[in-house]
Amino acid sequence: SQKIEQNSEALNIQEGKTATLTCNYTNYSPAYLQWYRQDPGRGPVFLLLIRENEKEKRKERLKVTFDTTLKQSLFHITASQPADSATYLCALDQVDSSYKLIFGSGTRLLVRP
Amino acid sequence: GAVVSQHPSRVICKSGTSVKIECRSLDFQATTMFWYRQFPKQSLMLMATSNEGSKATYEQGVEKDKFLINHASLTLSTLTVTSAHPEDSSFYICSAISEGAYSNQPQHFGDGTRLSIL
Image (cartoon, rainbow over all chains, first blue to last red; front, side, top):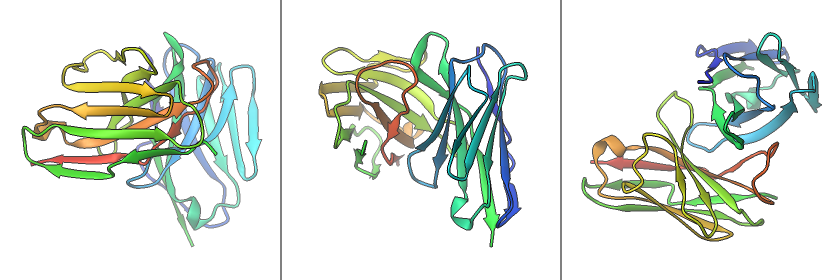
C-alpha cells in the first residue's frame, strides 16, 4: 500500500529565509499531488496541486516540485513570515480512486520573527 | 468561494450518546463529500465517501453501523456517531468537491468537530 513520509520533526527557521518541506512516497506514482496547510484546531486549506507530468508549480511565494523518479515532492516557501507557521500536509490520489486522497502526517513549520 | 461549514465545532458528551455532525457546502454544490478523522499529530484518515442520493462508501475497518452517513442534498452531509464511547473521541473533519467526482480537484474542508466522550 502507498505510504507517505513527511518529516515529523518541526522545521524551525528565521523570518525571511526559504522553508523547504519534503514529501516522499513509497509505492506507485500518483497522477497528481496536493499540498495543504493546517492550523491548530482547523481543517486543511488547499494550497497547490501538481500533476505527474509537471516538474514545478508556483503560486506567489510558494513553489512545488515533483520528481517521479525520486518519488518525492518538495514544497518551498520563500521570504517566509511568522504567519506561515502551520502544519503542511501533502496528499496523493489513491490508486483505486482518482478523487480520493491519502494524506501524510504533515510537517510543522515555525517561522521565528 | 468554495466554503464548507461544519457544525458543531466541539461536542462533549457522555458515553452511549449518539452525536450528529453536519457538513454544508455554502456556495457550491457538492456531489461528493468525504469524512475523515484525525488523531493528534497524525494524518487525516479517510472514513467514508458520501455521494448525494446514494449510500456512502466506507473505508476498510470503518463500521458503517457505528458511523451513519446521510447525504440527502447537494449541500448537506451528516455523520452520526452512534452510541459513542471514549475511543471514538477524535477530531472529525469533512470535505467536499464540486462539479462531480473526477481527478485533479482540490478538496474544500470544514473546520472540524472536536468530539470528546466522557
